Every structure is written in C-alpha cells, then in structure tokens.
Length: 577
Image 1 (cartoon, one colour):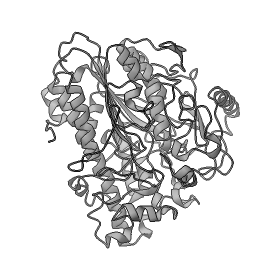
Image 2 (cartoon, helix red, strand yellow; image 1 turned 45 degrees about the vertical axis):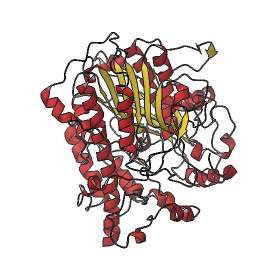
Image 3 (cartoon, one colour; image 1 turned 60 degrees about the horizontal axis):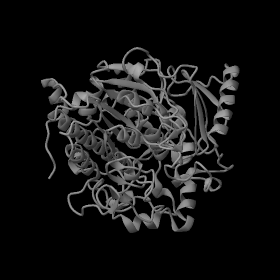
Image 4 (tube, helix red, strand yellow; image 1 turned 180 degrees about the vertical axis):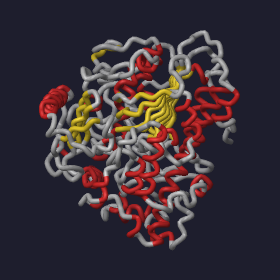
C-alpha cells in the first residue's frame, strides 16, 4: 500500500515548520539522483514536463547552472559518493564500455574499490544513520554492495539499469540483475512493483524506522528514472498527448526560449545546428518533416513516455518531501537534486547483434510491433527508448550526449535546498564539479575530511572543494582559475579552468582535436576559441597530461567505439555477471 501525502507545493503555501528538536542538531542529508536526465528536463531549467516538486525545491533553494559530473553513470556515482576521481576509485571507465586494454588495470576494477571511503561510511562513523535505495551500479558482490560501503540499510540494484516493472535485465550484456536488501540477495515483488515507487516507499520506511531517536540521517536515492527502458504508469504518459507533435527542433527552440526567460542562459545563447548534419547516423538530429505520419506519432509517444517517467519521479520525490515535513525534519535536511550525466541517445535495439535478445525478452520493441497503436508504450513487456533527437532537446542548450565530453554529456542541473543557509531562488553560474559534493556534506555535518589514511589503512582522500561558502553567500564561485579539474571517460577528455573548458572527443564522437570553449557565454560550444587563445590551450593541455599521470589513466586504443564495445563486452566470458 503506497502512502499518500500532500504534494510539496501545497506545503509551501502553508509555510514550513521548524525542524523537530533533536539531541543532535546536525542536518540530515537527502541526495536525489535522476538517471540520464538532460539539463533542460525539469521545469526550473526550462522544461514543459510537469515537475512541481523539483521546481518548488528550486524556488526555495540554489540552482547551479554550470555544474558538471562524469558523462556516464557509475563514474559519476563513484565521485559523488567518495569525492575521489573515478580513475583512482575503480571506475576509470564504465564496465559496460570498458576497452580491452583497461581490464585488469588498477583503477579499472569495474566497481568501487577499497582505496576510497564513502561519505556514507564517514557519516555513519560520525553518528549518522545511513540509508540507500535504488540504483547503485558500483558493484554487486559481497564486498562492493551498498551495505558493505557504509549504509545501515539499503535496497539496491547492482547494474546500470533494469526493467522498471519486472525483474529482468534491460540489455543483453547482463546475464541477470542483482537486487540486494542490506547484505541479502533478494527478488523483486511480483505484483504492484514499479521501480520509482518502490524506491520511494523503501527510503521513507528506512528513515521512519529511526526518526524519533534524535540522530541525523543520510538518505541516498538513486532512481532508475529516466534511464531506458522508458516506462511509467499509463496515466502519466497519456497526460502528454499532443505535447510533442511538433517535433524535435521545435522542442529545443521552446526550451531555450524558456531558459532565457528563467535566466538560466543569456539571450545571446544559440543552439548548435550542426547536429543535424553529423555524418554518424546514431547521433544525428533527425528532420521531423521528413518523417511519415506514423513515424511522427511513434516518436511523439516515445517522448511522452520519457516525460511520464520523469513526471512520476517528481511526484515520488514530493512524497519524500511531504513525509519529512510531516515529521518536522524538512527544514533541517540538506536536499541535493542532480542527474548522474546528460541524456542518453543510444538505441541498443539498432544493433543486429542484439535483435534476437530483445525479441526474446520483450513483447513489443520495434515500431512495426505496435501496428499503428502506440498506447501500450511504457507498459509491462514493452521496451522503449527515445533516440538522439529527443536526447538533443533534453540537453538544451548544450550539444551532444552521455559519454561525450561536450556540455551535453557533462552539464547537469544541481539544486540545493537548506533554508538555514541557502537563500531561496538564487543561481550560481560559475563552474562546480561533482567531486565538490563530499567535502560540502562533511563540512555541513562537522565531520573532518580524511587525509591519506582512515581507520588504519591508506586511502585516496577526497579531492574536491567545499561548496559551503557559495551556499552561504560568502563567495560566488566554488572553483576559480586556480582550481582546475581534469576529466576523462572512454577517450573523451576535458579540463575545466574557471569559465573555460578544453575538451577532446575522438572519432566517431568527434574529430579528436582539442577545442576550447567559454562555458558561461557559450554552453552550446559553437565558438571554438582554441586558435584565439593558444597559450591557454597549451597550459590546459599540460595540466591534463599531469592529471592523466596522477590518476594512472589508461587511454583507450585507436579505433575504440563505445557502442561496439558493449557487444564485445557482452561476449566476454558469457556476459557481464
């Protein structure tokens, strides 16, 4: 039986209550992670999708409009939970796309390794309750599950995703899916299960189990929304009938206009129109007018399904907020909402190597399976994704996608609410990075950031910079030009230095040349400044070389293609276990 709480906006109208008196006055932490969600996908960042709870969070908190993560799921989650670069912490590349030469190398274990301490462990050791529900994707063996890495209670999915209605993999590179409750391998309920709702109910149950004992908590929620397969209860999808009938480019234009209106980007920002001319078909922005009526209806329903899944996630997030308000804990909880990377354009079903698997495991996959009636999309037995053209709209105003070192892959929304410190409705346009979250939480909790040893063993310590001075209004930037950041995933690389980003995407994702962009003035990355600022390029290239050596980066080989690598890895020893 699902709980029913008033939605979050209604609470705002009544005014938030003061947090309940506690023996331990330190704040709680609620970390909400959307999966593969684009920069423009919630209303506060320009979307037409109804996200009233997240929008209210933004109205009462601080929006980071230049916040960056890794360009793929597990590397980001590694940095978010440890504060350590993914190459040192075990996810130098995402296991599913790891290159042949990276297997067996230090830092490429494919799970969160023992050289880091999670923020859950640090807070638990400092007297916090620690809870986790949802996607983990940092290991599914006894020593690498959430329960073993600092969480008192956890219900976790070990893989990068899964079907949202039933217990089965979503892709052929997994032999099975692993769900753990605490340290026990468990099966999903066979009735009344939907992933988003189950994770929400579980995290509320965990919090509620100790809510009256006076100890603060960390609650970590990793939703599968909006990772494919895109699925949602049908009313959430039907709600968007007709909304996407004007196509891909129109949606991009509307979202950009809304972002300008909201002050997310300046009126001078334009969209990258070269995406409709790329020669590499899997990532091309399609011409809506060139599609048949049936094709347009199919694509519109795909985006409706995505929107419905996100809408449902927002409603579930509102249930958590309402629970915390009911218990008098909302204003004493530091809430962070973010996505783990940019939107995913991949259509795995396009691979001929995977066709038989999808036909075996899903009743409906291809457009022709629907026989002109797309109303079952998103329901049990139906596989759905949305492809590169809708993903391009999700990334607005940025270009390209997940796994790219473009802004479309790396720039995501971050919203922080903590009324005791954070001024409502404020925006930060300066650069911040995912590594900066752990030091922030620790400072707010009054917990010392560990150095090179912890609990008698050597570790890689967190390397980020606390965002507390920005959250409090004392500073307007987390990282200035003196605090550059190096980054790499699957051959795509970047250096951030102040407002500038030097990036490189090898073929087929790019030219392999280093390009320089102003991330504030040009988030679409249209104007390459490399030729105009050669000294800065050289300085940032030298920094990247130092970074690569420091984190023991293993470069992908020439000709590496992440899409093709999934097929290779699926066949590696019978699949990824």
